[in-house]
Image (tube, rainbow, N blue to C red; front, side, top):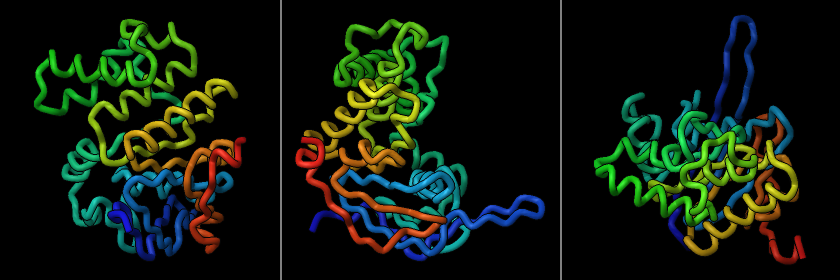
Amino acid sequence: MSETVIETQQLSKEFVRDDFHVVALKDVDLTIHRGEFVALMGPSGSGKSTLLHLIAAMDRPTDGKILVLGQDLRSLSDSEMAHWRNQHIGFIFQSFNLIPVMTALENVELPLKLTNLKKRERVEHATTALSLVGLGDRLNHLPRQLSGGQEQRVAIARAIVTDPDLILADEPTGNLDAASAQEALTLLEKLNRDYNKTIIMVTHDPNAASFATIVRHLDKGTLLPDGRESYQTSAKRG
């Protein structure tokens, strides 16, 4: 059995705002191993993005246990969480989150400014990442000069430029047309297959989920007990 990289036990998250009390996650037990490509599916409000943010150390659980890469995230201070996240997580947002006045190269270089790399090394790493996603000829383009699919590929390059242990994607095809979505998903599939990257992707789209090797379903904050649903992606899409 491959190494366990994510383990949650009875993981719960509640939000309290004024008189509203919302249970976003309830008693989630989840295990993910290195090299898996896991799709978290569920309707809006099912808790899938909340779970992803907890794994990414972008939020704190209300109760339960969460170990990611052997680290008990609940034991970290806010500053320690930020440092740990920068070291280990590559996050892909639905809305791309690119800086409009920065070129593709500058956007991808951003996470490396938190490292000890020199400018020349940062540029080399960012150039390599953009070449890997097929944008080696778009280094000096601004986001507005790129298509939506190209913007998302820049966002993927930014997520992988630090060679993170985990790639987390929150509805990465939500703002893309069908062709661009297919390109982005094929790229994630390649990162998993050829580079053994562990990927957790939140999606409500069955086609997007078919690119994953494992699909788990959430509903009303609960991880459904339908087991580790494995997909032969070539068979599903063939």
